[in-house]
Length: 272
Image 1: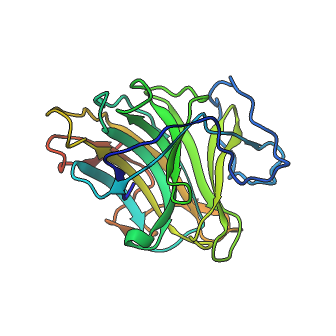
Image 2: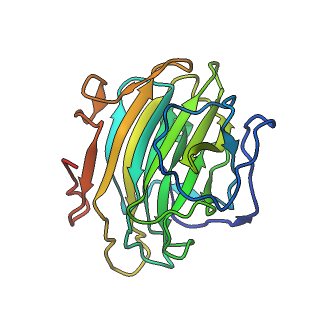
């Protein structure tokens, strides 16, 4: 996240529905992870899609730029309407009882500074909740809350197919976050956001080391992000995110791995 919760997190129990069509069936619980890769992107109108709900929602009561925050990844220089890709889950050495976190995610964003809006989806391990487990999560600036989906039992070594997209244009269309699970697309959330029908897209690993905690280290495993694709318009097909896509910092990010070395600033990309 561009802004980090450094002080207060308020727990909101229960489920928070997204803005998906009411006609979508609810995703069944207890389903195993997918055994196949998705054959294409999801849609609110797809016959096999279902909607899910967060098991825990934690609004960020106060968020400010914070020391102890580091990240590595890629951002499109242009604007796109969706991103599909696969992110590996790892066991991060997050210190429990702190505001440490590690997250690997995709993000759609627009604006700058306090006017920035975004939606992100990925997996995270946090020091303030979750009992050192890796969890599927979303975060958006409409709710300014972490939403955790503990019905999906993820573990180190899993590779999660995730998709962010909008299927509409306008100044504030709904942007959707999806997880491929149980060999079907599960809608995690759908939020109207001022991103228009196209936004900058990020693929990042983030680390936040709580500066108020006792001195210590966070162990970051080697992580892979692969099969990343983009769509140029709400109704456009997917295409690979490769060297033909203008990208910051500038490389072929269709498949890459992240190696972490101390100190925090020494990230490197390697061949998977």
